[in-house]
Image 1 (tube, helix red, strand yellow):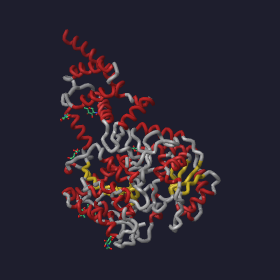
Image 2: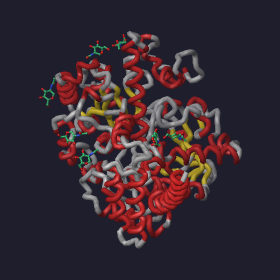
Image 3: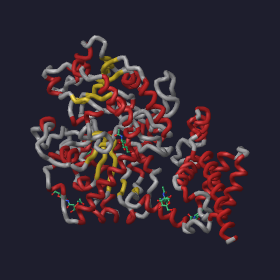
Amino acid sequence: MDGSITAMLRNKIWFVFCALFVFWFLLLYGFDWSFLPGLATISHEKSIQSLDPNSIRVTDNHEGKEDVTSNLMNATNFGVDNSGNTTNAVAGTKEKKFNDWSTEDEVSEDVDDLEKELEPIFLKDDANREKEEQQNKCRGRYIYVHDLPSRFNDDLLKQCKSLNKWTDMCQYFVNNGLGSELGNPAKIFSRTGWFNTHQFSLEVIFHNRMKQYECLTNDSSEAAAVYVPYYAGLDVSRHLWGSNASVRDSDSLSLIKWLRERPEWDVMWGRDHFMVAGRITWDFRRGIDDDNHWGNKLMVLPESKNMTMLTIESSPWNSNDFAIPYPTYFHPWTDNDIVQWQNRMRKQKRKSLFCFAGAPRPNIEDSIRGEVMNQCKSSNRRCCLMECSDQRNKCQKPVHIMKMFQNSVFCLQPPGDSFTRRSTFDSILAGCIPVFFTPASGYVQYLWHLPRDFNKYSVLIPEDDVKNRRVSIEKKLSQISKSRVSAMREEVIKLIPNVTYADPRSRWQKFEDAFDLTVKGVLERLESLRQEMEEGKNASLSYDEEDSWKYFTFGKVDKHEWDHFFLRADRSKYY
Ligand SMILES: *[C@@H]1O[C@H](CO)[C@@H](O)[C@H](O)[C@H]1NC(C)=O
Ligand SMILES: *[C@@H]1O[C@H](CO)[C@@H](O)[C@H](O)[C@H]1NC(C)=O
Ligand SMILES: *[C@@H]1O[C@H](CO)[C@@H](O)[C@H](O)[C@H]1NC(C)=O
Ligand SMILES: *[C@@H]1O[C@H](CO)[C@@H](O)[C@H](O)[C@H]1NC(C)=O
Ligand SMILES: *[C@@H]1O[C@H](CO)[C@@H](O)[C@H](O)[C@H]1NC(C)=O
Ligand SMILES: *[C@@H]1O[C@H](CO)[C@@H](O)[C@H](O)[C@H]1NC(C)=O
Ligand SMILES: *[C@@H]1O[C@H](CO)[C@@H](O)[C@H](O)[C@H]1NC(C)=O
């Protein structure tokens, strides 16, 4: 009798203790103090300063924060002392972050008491469970990174002065490939996170992001995917103009030879391998061994056909390459930087109906650029135009581009030398609704990053209608109702994190960035390839490779209203 009353009392006291503890714990760690402007800027600056600019390690601050928040997700983990490392991590962060808070001592005493009291109640094998959770989190997501000879990546960075015939690329490789910091002199950007990023820097940025990936492994037998950190675009860019075909191919061929000699190749004949080539696919698809044909032949080699090749523009007619977003100028450090930017773009006043930044293509017979620019010029101030023809052009300056896009409701994205444009991602970043003229510019490209429901975030005006002057762009855009425009813009703004590459030195907690979505897409693709191989099936036999765009976008190759966009007379002529 007495015993059970005491037990009840003890239970009550424990309950009060527990509640108090949870309350304090949440107050200290669960609550996001960073929304207070003063605190947010201080902690942000600190973490940047404490970093060596060349290092890609996350600061203790960031890692600690993640530990604490993930533990808070699970109430049963509170204060349980399992003599594991979590408690140490929590205590460590506490010391670093809150050591001058007077409440801290009281709280830790309570914690100590509670830990002892609660230990027998909760399961004892929490340490094991955590280890298991980590393994569960990474199961099927481990990535093995090939340790390539430096001539395939780092040495190319050292040659930055001679990589490009016209531009010194060195300025673009600082800050882990993000380029030099832009600052915010004209108040067009946010205070931090903006860089002069080159459109062809993706392979460097991606590699540096991969170094931070949470499920890396050195045991290739455990890996779901093998990443090949070859800077294919930087390699070929040295030889695109003036070199003969064998010079252009030479490093790609030796990379492939190197890969085939690894034991990892034999596991799936390279089908579990992937790489990023930060230029458009046409720079790597020379079908004919002739010096006069463009590019090298990296993507048409039999080995590459087995791999998953990621590029900023993929071929609609081939099945081994997948497009991922061009890098744009914003590489935020935290989720909060993204949210603040999104809110600012929501409130932005937009005085122009539509705008275009680019140059005409007089040498391309079918180009609609000239007509688009004419329509813009004659639209009586509702369209703003930034001509990129002359050398001292404003188009090279991120501040001019971003200012114009932020001021406009729609941003025109007509094809140029190829289907896609980096400008599409600049415009999404500015909350400006992209207007496409062919589905090849986006809809069949960025399958892992753009929503399938195209009308929700963009407008399609068929290029033939523009070419034949059957359509007034201004009329077409001004007919869209105000409420639809708002809904579309909101969708565009929601897309910003999905098409943004986070600063490789940071780690977001809430949003997935373009890198995360890419890794997810690759892993899902490899998973289904594995399944196919196990079942002895071969999906690529079920459709003509020419229909790849349709197969990957819709999962079937039936007749489609977009077919006419993808007709080409000569299959060996790539673009
Ligand atoms: C919380 O812990 C339980 C086991 O105690 C586990 O099954 C569950 O997945 C955990 N939840 C989270 C969000 O970690
Ligand atoms: C805890 O950390 C130490 C090094 O700090 C490590 O040797 C040990 O294996 C870790 N224990 C667990 C359970 O992860
Ligand atoms: C893999 O091995 C390298 C060199 O031995 C080491 O620096 C790295 O931390 C290891 N990575 C993992 C995920 O174990
Ligand atoms: C290609 O160019 C390189 C360097 O200029 C030269 O050594 C080589 O002989 C050329 N190859 C062919 C097949 O013309
Ligand atoms: C590509 O994969 C197939 C099996 O899927 C294999 O038969 C072929 O040898 C591989 N090609 C190369 C070059 O390894
Ligand atoms: C962005 O990606 C997330 C997954 O991280 C997804 O849930 C969300 O729907 C995407 N946003 C848009 C607007 O497509
Ligand atoms: C599937 O068929 C294609 C085309 O014949 C072939 O190139 C590829 O190696 C096959 N894939 C597998 C996994 O056997």
